[in-house]
Amino acid sequence: MIADLDTLLIALYVELTDRIIPARGLARRGPGGPLEVTDAELVCLAVAQVLLRFDDERHWLRAAPKLIGHLFPRLLGISEYNDRVKAAAPLMEAALRWLARIVQRLLALNACIWHNWQIGAPVKRSLIAYDH
Image (cartoon, rainbow, N blue to C red; front, side, top):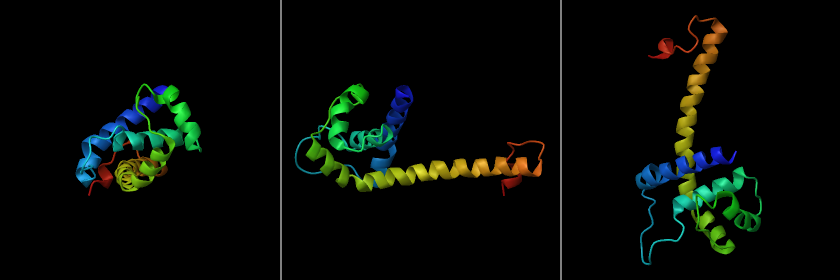
């Protein structure tokens, strides 16, 4: 499962940094140097926490170096992690909206294939009948 989780987290990180954050204007600006853990890394850490079923942030931050430290070598302390996750709500909402658009397309494709099976269409994966 770790290899699949790695792939998911890498894809999410790339999508966040290349599309979602720039498109929404959610890039951080202001005084101070760059963050030790970027917003994209933070969201990926929060996703991994849920997928690996860690309900407690303290336990998660202790286990994270062993489980995903090869992807995210820098981690935050418990209080900063909690504060940053709460502040990242708009970014997580933007990521959720992006994902809901890919899921919507998959649902439509699957509904067409299912319908073709129900009506006994000779070509089950054809979407020609729905292309208008």
